[in-house]
Image 1: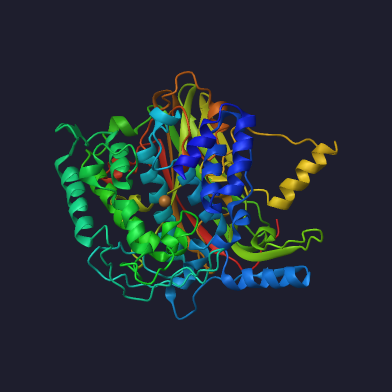
Image 2: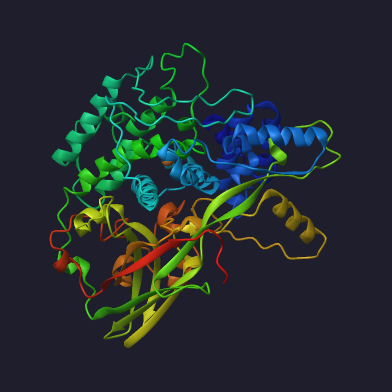
Length: 584
Ligand SMILES: [Cu+2]
């Protein structure tokens, strides 16, 4: 895949690239081609703004269940247009099924797969160009947020938060993907209570040894380099170094010594039902970026990895008041207002909607003359649009950055958590620049503008339709050179909540723009034009906000009262899950 990527990415001009792509599409393995081609499109200067069709429409087999794909074949054979409902895997006898809508969400799987395409673990900027600023920290933060979101989803469904996996303990929850590769091989199913097994090239002992070295590095605050040097971890840049080491990516400072804990964890889980490769089973869902999050074990593995990052962050000194406060700036009030008729202030509504996925690519037929419309219909979490109304008082005109976080108010036992416990489960909802005048400023911000999410992508048919219309001169086809495929689906911005309402806390923090922004001279409007900055950073150049990701809740909180300076505000809000989309 990487070799083919080099051919496509290194092609001297667009014409050579296009011809090489056409050549390789016919002659290489389809998945090899798809990956190498997609990563090349995402990284070529002359392909900026190119929109790839949604991943779940390019390879529906990787996102849908076998029954749906079979029905699509029947529809194609009998030339009967069909809309096929897809159910989530499992049954009510498995409590994990209550959160399957989250792990199996096609948009989230597509986000996860695109994150790994934008930040390939094998990326070497010396060779390929783009710098991938803070790739290791982004690896930590994006997966940290996925785990925090999953936990909030679990609490919304009366499940305790996810437990970390351990190499020598049982993987309690099994998983039956119910999906089939395009070549007809089934994704392996994992029964309950399996143990990890040694692979021919990698043992459980190897995993523990490598992890022990990482834990040593974190505890001692130093990482060993290949030339017997030491690099300090206990500073703001430490998380980036550690992220590269744990994933591991080509940025790891000592891959021989610190191994590739996270990548190997995925492989160990993927092959757990046939570790010695006796039965020739294909790889499990954990081995593909676009299928991994379906398996609850994905979140258990990532909780394990996330705990290592927490161990590191807890080594750092808590922020001093001078690092937290924004002198002469006070948040007076925060309100959250939904746009539905039934909304009351500080109460937000979620619901499940139905969406169609084009299945044309799921079925092959020689005779393409007669197009048959075949779609799958999936149920997906969504929420009513809402806005934040934040009143900020400033004693002089200043520029600020507003950071918004959400967290469940109570733990699974129904207790309120101290900030030092809850902070690690904070979900970042937004992050945006503001210009403040002297006096009271009422800042309103729409949920749709969130810096962590992307809007629903256009489906294959719609994209084709839009292009054809513009060729005929019926409409303008605009392109956005900042377009990103990576980004949490906007639908999933809010956790589900409960039918009777579930209480969350919203934390709003405003910090000093001119101190936080590291890209000199970058204007607030330019920052606003970079989509999904929060979880997906930037692919080249520098991430404008120099503060650690998750600031100021990434470090220990000693005293909650002292921590909450006047430039921060906390309010309660309720999230209610309703049966039907509310009327706007
Ligand atoms: Cu990942």
